[in-house]
Length: 362
Image 1 (tube, rainbow, N blue to C red):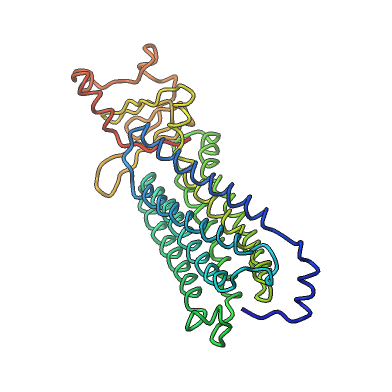
Image 2 (image 1 turned 60 degrees about the vertical axis):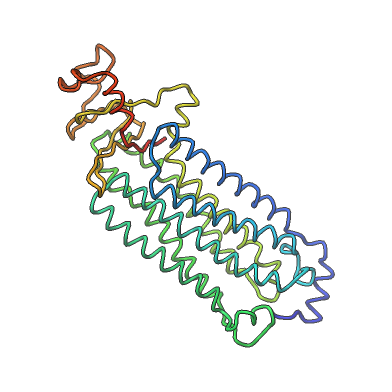
C-alpha cells in the first residue's frame, strides 16, 4: 500500500468529514436481507411442493455461504475505516488482508451462483443442447473466477508485501477490470441460454413472452455487473479505503441480486400457497393438469420430471398441447383420466401424485 505524501495528507485532513460508510452499511443490510429472504423462500417453496432438493439448491446454499463471508469481511472493513480517507484507517494491515478476502469470497459466490442457475437449466429443459451449452459456460465461469482468486492470492510474493509495501507486487487493476468484463459477458450468455428452448415450446407467443420474462429478470444482475466494472476503474492505491468503496458496494449488491434472481423462478408454490391456491397436481400416464404450462423433461438418470410454469391453461398430453376447449373432461372440471388409471385404488393414485418430481415456477 502506497504511503501518502505530505500534500495528500493535508488534503485528507481538510476533508476529514468525508464519509461513505452510511452508503456501505445500507447496501450491506439490504443486500444481505434480500439474499437471506430469497433463499429461505426458495426452500420453503420446495417444502410446500414436496420437491426433493437438487444440486442447484445445494449450490445456491454454497453461494449463501460466500455471501455471508463477504458480508463479514465488508462489515469488518467498514468498522476499520473503509469509507474514509486512508489516513483515518484503524489498521492498514487488516484492511489489506480484508481486500484479498473480499475478492476471494466475491468470486466464489459469483461462481457457485452461476453454476446453480446452469444446473437448474439442465434439470428443467434436459436437452442435449442445454447440457452442452451449460457445461461450456460452467467451465468458463469456473476458470475465470479461479483466475481472479489466483491473481488476488499471488499479486505479491510473498503476499505480506501487499501490506508491508514490498517490491514484489504486480499491478492488478487491468487484470481485474478485464475479468469483470468477462463476468458481464457470461451473465448475458447465461441470460440468453433459455431463450431457444422456451421459443420452441408449444404455446402461444404471449405465453412465451411471459415465461421468458421470468428468466430475463436476471438481467438486473448484468446492470449491477456493469456498474461494478465502472466502479473498479476508480480504484486508486493512493487512497484505497476511499476509492474502493464503490467496487466493494456494487460487488456485494451484484452477488445479492444474483442470488435473488436465481431463486425467483422457484417461488411459485409459495405464492400460490399464500394466496390460498392449491399446489396439488394431477400427473399420470402422460397427462398433466395443473393450470400451468407443463414441459416434460428427462434427467440423466432416465426418469421423467414435470417442470411446471404456471403461465397458461394449456394441457400437455402425449407430447402435444391440448387447448382448454378440447378437453374431454371439461364438463367435470378435471383432467382426462386414462382407463388404466381410473381403475386404480384412489390411495395408490394419490401416492403416485405425491411422488411426482416437479420444479414449479412463478
